[in-house]
Length: 451
Image: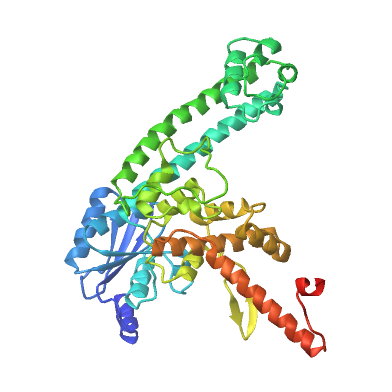
């Protein structure tokens, strides 16, 4: 096997002389180095921490400086961090891009194939933000998981109420609000009088109390009450974890370097800022402005939560992307044109599971009825391409603006869009005048014709 590798490497131009390839599994890790670095150029290591340090020591003895590994689940994270701390240049390679290059595929030879592709420069490293941003990203993703699990318990409570024919969700917009939880606690404590339960509603509840009382007449069953009790306790348990997580998130964000010391400027959006129930307990917008140096929430479709997702998934430095087009392509928000034999095979966007792209799509979808340039752009694209394509096109435009704002640190303004619209209007007017002149007509403004 080593002789075949030597013959193959003689025929190719080696760009990375000190390159190694790693195939990562849940229990076993295979590492391959150039054949001239060790008598046993391919070794097997266990996934225990001690073996990972032994792997790093062996790579150091083999004079390896660059390492390529496949992004397999989350198994690559411990080894990636150890190798990065040791000073190795680690290439985290997308498994899809690696498998697109044909070659041998087995547990033993896969690491040799990765090492060969890396040595001849056929592998590209995936984007990974700095370590401080990665730590913040871990907490923010965990917060999203906690919110999802809390939402599961809300669904369980709703199911128990429906099975008892308690139509509480028809009279209250949120069964987990102040009024909803007060009524649920009273039901679980044994109260069955619908009038007394209706009086527990907060004064700001707009539903008539007699209608609330009618909705609370149901078939109370012991098994459904037990499920309601456990679901409410589970929901409240996750609600106690989220504030603790917010405190840790705020601590990590305060440790990030400041891009500006100026106070946050007033909002330029026409709508006022309203804090949502799932937003963090601290002033997230001010922290984002301090870290990014510019207010990202001024961009239409970008809320504080969306800006936080962009910060945790990308960071504040977008210099890794050569331009806005590359940034949008990395997010999977631009068409991937495939041409063969002069024929366009496909212009669809790549199927990318990216949290930042999902957040931008949700922000773009919220602009369907917005006023201003983005609202008009979304509705124009929806009439032309459809809803799904309009969401992607609007998210693509928001991503390009985010790249420009983060790279230049200039506040968002719509003047450039107004200039583009004015130029388009002038071009349309010149085109109409030219066509009218060709047909023997002359166009006059409405004011001139009225006179």
